[in-house]
Image: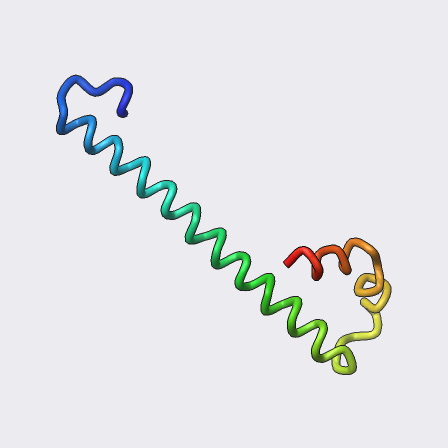
Length: 70
């Protein structure tokens, strides 16, 4: 939209659309990080209440890297 704009008002609308897209992306990333943090915190604090069938997943290197990466 911005590169094809012929007048100033159309260019401003294109800039607003780009800004809205970036803001939506940042907000969704923050929400995802918050959910990951809650999941990691819950897994690390309530180890005794977790299902034993998934113990091998929780003990894997990937899962530990996931928790440390948060």
